Amino acid sequence: MSKETELTAMVERELETLEIYLWGASMRCTVSLQEYITASIAQGVSKEVIKASLLNDLETGGRIFGEFRNAVRATGTGSLNRFSDVAQFNDRGVNTQDYRWVAVLSNTCPDCEARHGQVKTFAEWEVAGLPRAGQTVCKGYCKCVLSDPKTTEMVKPIKREKRSK
Image 1 (cartoon, rainbow, N blue to C red):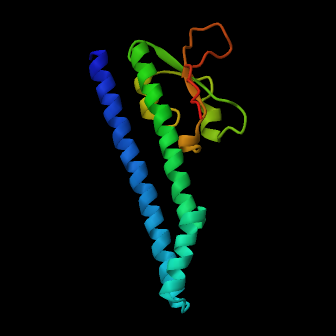
Image 2 (cartoon, helix red, strand yellow):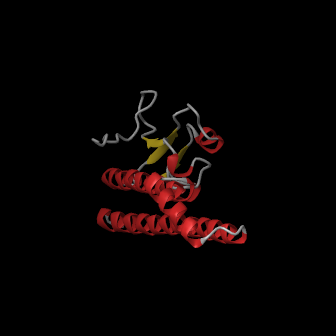
Image 3 (cartoon, rainbow, N blue to C red):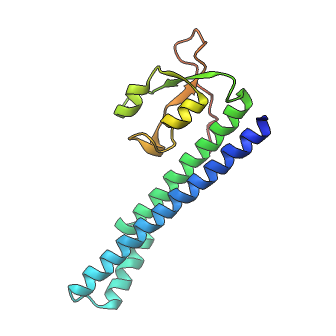
């Protein structure tokens, strides 16, 4: 498989994953809205008060809309990081080398702690779950990287560019 074909397949998988995560966030928001409105009506709250309360929640990033905003932000950040990973893996040739899981080891989830130091091919890591791919306890918040296992340095992760604010 050519690098271009590999890249296209990886990007398509990431786009599908992004769509699934955004759909899930919107569904959770919808359920929260339905629950809030239904419970408020059952308690005798007027539609005007419910509307004002929801507008306030929207403006202030309250419980319902704040959760949705945070989910979209986390999904976007995780997706951008995974797109960066995809490009870097493609540059290295995903099927041509092994990768070592490198965990941050500070507030590390049990899944990532168990994977720390393990060496597998890219295909094996795809099955087990790549960093930030949502298949570990820490999901998209994962700070782990896959690195070159042949390095003599303690950790040589794939470099990630810092975004300017």
